[in-house]
Structures are given as structure tokens and as C-alpha cells.
Length: 81
Image 1 (cartoon, rainbow, N blue to C red):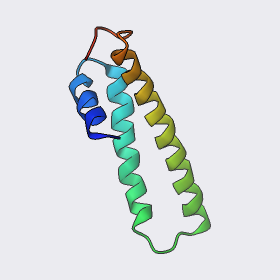
Image 2: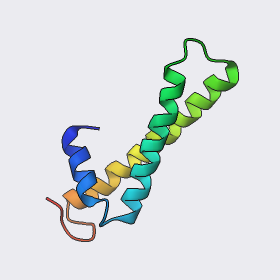
Image 3: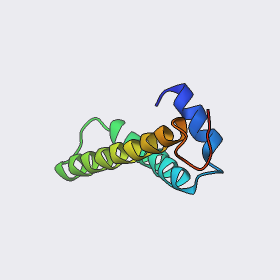
Image 4: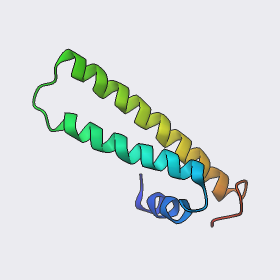
């Protein structure tokens, strides 16, 4: 995520429980993926798990971006411009 998006997300975390949930999940998935990225070789099951985590992270990011778009366009609980 871009720095500007990250700042907007952080400013909205206390106001939007849904955003907070997806953001925290995104951060946790990032930590889990780092464990796989530091390995030189992954087993077949590790490779499958890594792909699964990447997909979950991407889905979460899409949700985060949808929520941010609602705020940017004034459709969420108040505007955050």
C-alpha cells in the first residue's frame, strides 16, 4: 500500500471496525508470509500454504481498498478527506 493510503487507514481504524479487522488481518498475513519468503526452499505443502496466504492477503487488500473508496467518495460513516 502507498504511504498516503496507509496514513488514511490508520486515521480511520478507530472509526471503522470493519476496516480495522481487515487491516489487522492484512498485517498478520504479511508477517506469516515473511516466514516463507526467508526460506531458501519450500516444500510442496509450504508452497501451497504460501499461495493460500497470498490469496487471502490480496482479498483483504481489495476489501480495504473498497472501504477507503467509500470514505473518499463520502459513502461511509462521514467523510475522511
